Image (cartoon, rainbow, N blue to C red):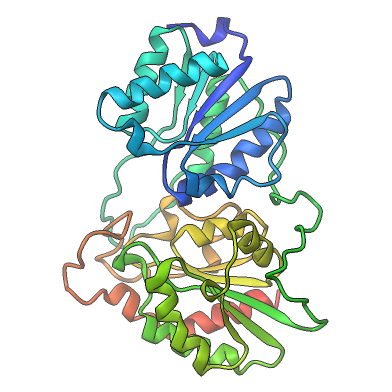
Length: 347
């Protein structure tokens, strides 16, 4: 294996074959690194879904969407690694997603003399009762990978649009002076992360009564769209974005014009960070101090029940509640969320 201290980094493969959330978490780190190391070429590998969030990217960053199903099993990742190395001739790898697939890829590439730096996934989360301490964020761990390669980290990330405004999207209405826009993403990938929709409706009902406020409901897929339909029809000044044909670029443009996002511990929380949008995030099975908060989001802006001894119980929210009622979420009152929204909007 090549010695990193004796290697001049010319081209870097960034492996992030992962979820939309993980790709979104990578953007605030990858963009500044690319800009600070303009003499280096970067090739980032991700999924087709995640590729669309890498808008307005640095000129020395290529983003490739890879279908994981085409490179499945043991031989698939090996073939992918060889194909990419042959095409782009990179001499270093920043592995931001250390799973079985990328493990096989880095083994092959190390044999070819490629320098490989891998993310520290951190210790497995344990139930620590009331003594919940914050851990290094995912962003810090990503930055450490590039430091291992001897690369500069770059200036602080503000937005995928830099200091300017987002390109105007035909989907985004004109925002009148004095209006306040709130984006609400009420869904999550697992039940342990999702605030009950019937309680979220109480939050939406109150917000819809606030003068000059407009609410944009966010979701993906037919099931979530159908769940939002009656909410949109019932309350004033509420728009369901899934009912409108649009792209990821349209969604990001919309978020850039909003004043606040209310979301679960989900991909939407991280997408908001890409446009510098303030966020109120609701946490259930996992703890907001676990290192998974969005870029530059603060613990004080989260809503969670710290006094429960049973949480955190699941980093990804996919474990069944031991009590069967998910009271870590159900016991969060709509008033608690509304108070947090008011606090941030008044800053």
